[in-house]
Image 1 (cartoon, rainbow, N blue to C red):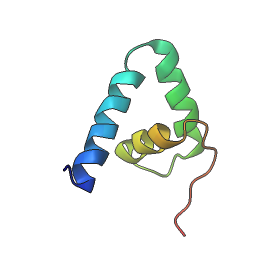
Image 2: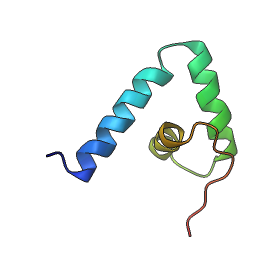
Image 3: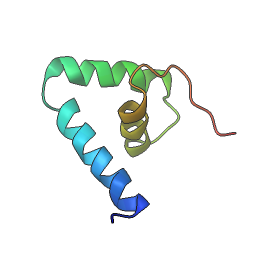
Image 4: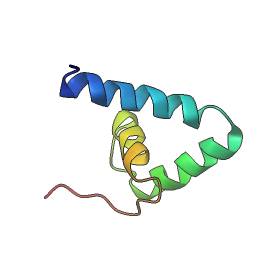
Length: 60
């Protein structure tokens, strides 16, 4: 059974493939990333993977 790290890594890799598949997908990713600009690229990818229409993310 894969551990949590492996599942997150797989999610990130699949999302990166989707994002880079077409210019339209890249622009959709950039729209989400622009709303959450304080996060690293890797975190942006995982935010997009879980909620592509996210407008604000915060640590509680």
